[in-house]
Length: 389
Length: 53
Image (cartoon, rainbow over all chains, first blue to last red; front, side, top):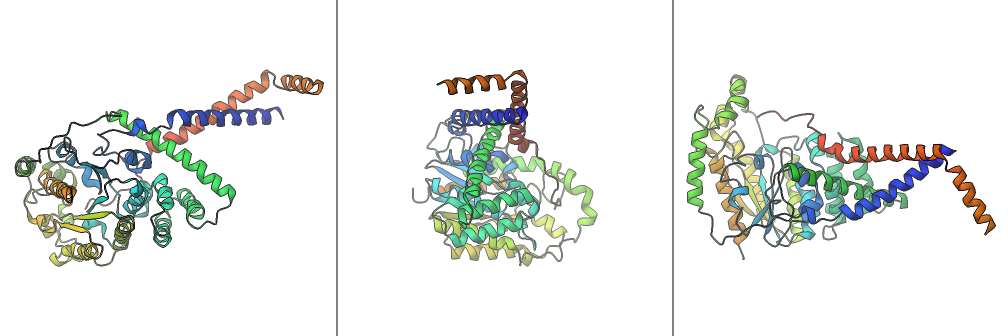
């Protein structure tokens, strides 16, 4: 009896402490920083509060994947190019981030976006027969963003149901998270949850957002991202020609030991040991059927329903490498053709970089942009931002 | 008033040293579990990788 009473007392004390801590530390001010936009960090991407706290009238969310982690130390990465520009790209995405992850993210943050524009960097290699891998999707899944997506009043229930169904299928490898997502669906989407479910979802959301906050603020300290930092803005347009020249020189210096114009370090580590088995490997590789197309369609539908103008940037494949693996030329164009068609249907701007696959030093490996490659993407983002301003 | 005083007296008698010891132990355990749950996400690492190509 005494132990049980002690347990209840401890629980009551714990709840009081939790409420106090939430009230004191729950402020979003520590998440606001001019450096946040181009900061590449997985905790940032999954924190609804970290992203929405930094959406200004000059912020464009740029959805992508692993390319953001490449070339960060060069002058051509968005981090450097837009450091003193009025435009702040909000980079969202890393390895395993694909269309459905970004659909949820956009649907979550859309009501908070002051500038109704979004950039989506499309990687052709996502469009495999199986599409996004469940393990990868689960790794990038954000509960705070998922709940915010379900609560977005501008998205139709039909689209939310489509996203919920696909999310459920992709979370099959993570039963616990899948159960939580189902509970959110029942409360925020289908309205079938009871009072206990509602209470659970509200409490869990508080916990998740507190967890996200703690993770982001800790990571900010490690990465030297200063809360409240501002940036000095110049009215000068970036000198694209100069940047491209610098990017080319940098990429040339880095790519000297292979015929694929890849950076030496990547070639030596990732490709050189597998050269024999890779020869002719992609001869039968197709990109015609993939669930990824439907996921991308959801993204464009979210844009339409939220009044957001999208720009799709289609990344190229390294021609020299895929010639070696014998990926047929017409198969390389499949993704671009299909994505362009989808973009046209939704009135999206499309920046097709497919032909740059044959430009020497444009890629640093098979699918990631080199410093030179980044300049093209930066310029597209900048021009897209300037439209109508 | 008398009943209230008796209740207070009984409650104080109930909350002896052993009671507070267990309360502290439970509180610390709950806090540790909470902190672990909050920061556990930071130590998650990928359990698989896509093929290099």
